[in-house]
Image (cartoon, rainbow over all chains, first blue to last red; front, side, top):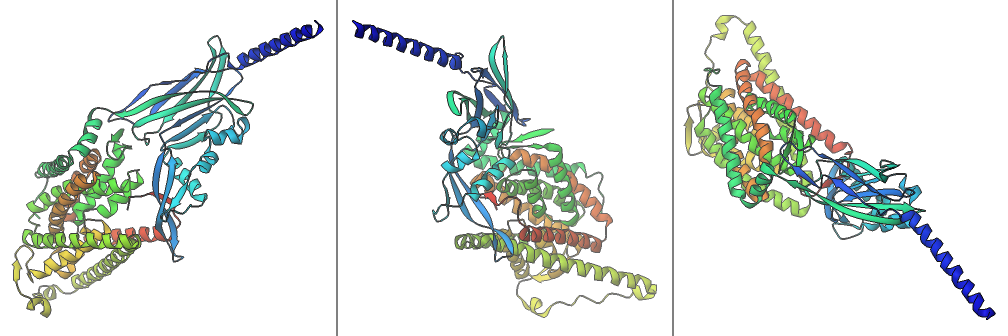
Length: 264
Length: 312
């Protein structure tokens, strides 16, 4: 009988602990993480010069946030410069960067190194160090290349405006509408058309505690779409059209200037 | 203010691009050069990928050289007969040059050779034209200071080189007032065609000195004839680049040609007001400035040590 009483107490204690655990868990995940991007479709028209993407959502109040916008990873071939004969700078060979995204934009609420452990950063490929560890770089002979070339690669992409890591750029609001966040991303016009992924990670105690993802598409429309299609599908016609219009423009202006000209 | 380019996949300030077209078109009309050796690096500076810049430049040169050729045609400055001989040679040379580059790319020495060819050819042409023009201008000053009776003495007939004169197929080129074997412009056209293909340019800045100093053509006929030859070369290049490589950006070409056709006309009118030696000295300074730029690019460390594969 005494034993069974002890068992009952133990069971109730377990239930109580479990309940407290559930309560504690709910406290951090009481609010389902959400992420929305506006607009979901970015049209590339003739006057396109990039876009403003507004990304909003809700997360638990105590979590920090990391937002990654990237394109599907692919192999990128580059040429590297070196000094030939100790005198002149020349392209000396090729490097292939395996499985790198074409576009990589990261925004956070705080310094990523302070809010997320290195293991987690590596797992989710957050930050250039984590990317460098996951990226294989091969030279023309298939030999692995030095890490310095990855740093050069990110510098190159940053100059193209399609790689950027910005800390403390996501703003949070806690009010009647819940625990919301918002960030306005200046989408670079240099980013090619395609489908892009947005990964939102909620971070607490150095770990990713929740995550969600969405996508948006950047696509050519109107005359831009028509010309791109023609250049690929009807290359000969596109070439002839380019020549004829150039000839017509040249001779037309020549004719316009006729009155202004004179004999030599 | 901005226009998106469907093939270059970038957005540009169209006023800047039209301005570039106007400036290079002006030089084209003034000197009879296509301007490819200037325009391609300028386009790269505004963010156009190198392959697109080179191919699209050829397209806009079609417009500028059509405009310039038309203007010079009206002024009677186009030697069609000479132009056709040079053009045939140029096509042959272009085909040979493309094979040379293929061979060099396979051996890995193409990039270095291309840059060195630029430096040597531009340096030689620029220096020679500069010195020669200064010398000619000084000579004229001395002549104008001399008594009028001496100036009016008839100039001695041009001596024709014994070797060139002994070649078969002698042809008189009425417009230029010179007689050459048909083999001479054919050979020189081929020579320039080879170099132009290696350097990836139309070759106007090489063809102009060849016509002035080797074919002894009058400067104003040289400009018109050079534009005539460039027109046909660039029509071929534009079509091949669009068809084979899909690297011609039609919108970019439109912006450039909008500026360049007007620039070419202004250049032609301006050219009439300048003396032949003044034109030569200005072109020499331009060519030497480009040479210095290329030398600096070679010896100074680039700001980025990587470039996309597939460019120049």
